[in-house]
Length: 136
Image 1: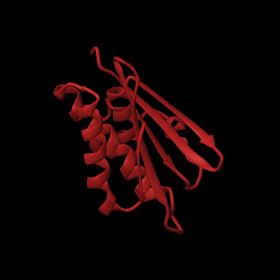
Image 2: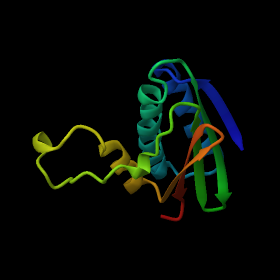
Image 3: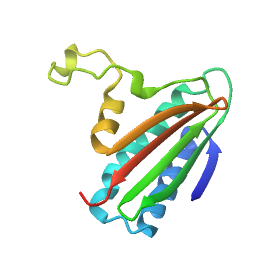
Image 4: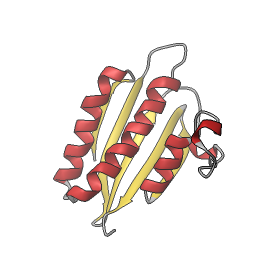
C-alpha cells in the first residue's frame, strides 16, 4: 500500500491527485479508467478540504492499492468531524439544475463512477474506501 499524508488545504490537491494517478498507472490501471478515478478523487478531496476541519487545521491521507488483480482501491482518511457522505440522500437529477438544492451532486458522481464505496468512522477518523473494477 502506498500512502501520502498532507495538510487538508487546496494547495495539497494537485500533489494528492498526481500521487494517486501515478499509483494507478504503476498498478496497471488502463488509461480510460484514469479520468473516473481522478473525478472521484477530486470530489472526495474537495469535501474533506472544505468541510472536515471547520475550526482547525488538519490532515488528509490517501492510500492506493490493488485489492485483487482487477480492483484498484483508494482509502481517504481525515481526522475531522464525523461525516458519512453515503448517508446523504441521493439528489434528484431529473429536476432542472436551477431548481435543485445546492450540494450532493459530487457524492452522486462518486457513487456512479466507482464500483464500490464504503464509509467507516474508526478511532476518530473518517475512512472512505473507493474501489474501481478494472475489467469494465
